[in-house]
Length: 204
Figure 1 (cartoon, rainbow, N blue to C red):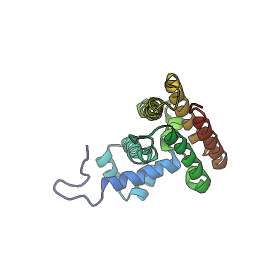
Figure 2 (cartoon, helix red, strand yellow):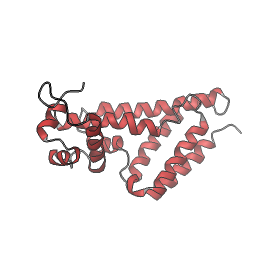
Figure 3 (cartoon, rainbow, N blue to C red):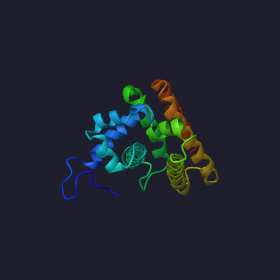
Figure 4 (tube, rainbow, N blue to C red):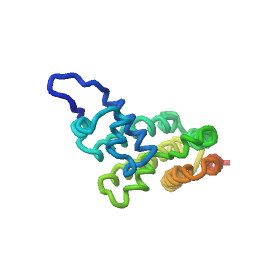
């Protein structure tokens, strides 16, 4: 998967992971179409011939950056929900922590989520992006569903509503990622409401 961008036998003068992280953050800030190859050269430290040889094309680099985002940023965000012991409290805590993030770091929050930004920008007309967008949606649904299944197994919630509630939570989260780009404080309030709503699902 990884390819050398220099002559055969010569060591690379860069780390691919560093290049991907730099490209990821640039795409995250500006979007795909507003990011030029010149911008990528400046932010990654590679010239365009090295970018093309290492990644194939701007779009290929973008897809690799999306994978990097999923592996690092999304995995970190969902770490507690994906924990083996996670249940209803983990879902409540997830939305509460998002609210705190949005209130405390509005400059970063207005960038939203790279996957959702990409879906809004490209998915309707770029068939290469749709699989990644669908995979993100499905993974988020599954993460919520697994946590809710644990909650049901421990007698906290109604097991009959797991699938519907997991879909609702995934759609809510995707909408929040768009809303935060408009108004982080308002998006934080929505997160807090979501946390209270999830907490109310517990059997009384």
